[in-house]
Length: 137
Image (cartoon, rainbow, N blue to C red; front, side, top):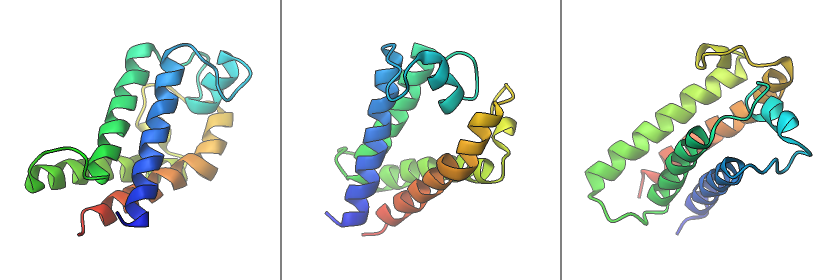
């Protein structure tokens, strides 16, 4: 498997695993849940279990698709990867431009917005590019 696929799949699955950890009540890597909530969502409370597990599932499945580890037809895989790349590209561009508040029903904190512009947006765009590269053989 090409290194770009390994890196993209591993990152997607790793971030998905973080969401599972958060769904269980952990504040990792922060010292408490309040700090975690402000850092990852810009809110006072961490998103709920269902929300964390939904994101975890989407990221995990995307990672498995990038790794070509899901036994589905090539056309279905292509469409699924295009959807995942589109979602991450939109999320990333919103983050980079400080517009994530347009995608969520709350106003994220200044702490989150700064981290989003500096890190999360770039990561999402990089993952979208990585997924796009995975669609080519």
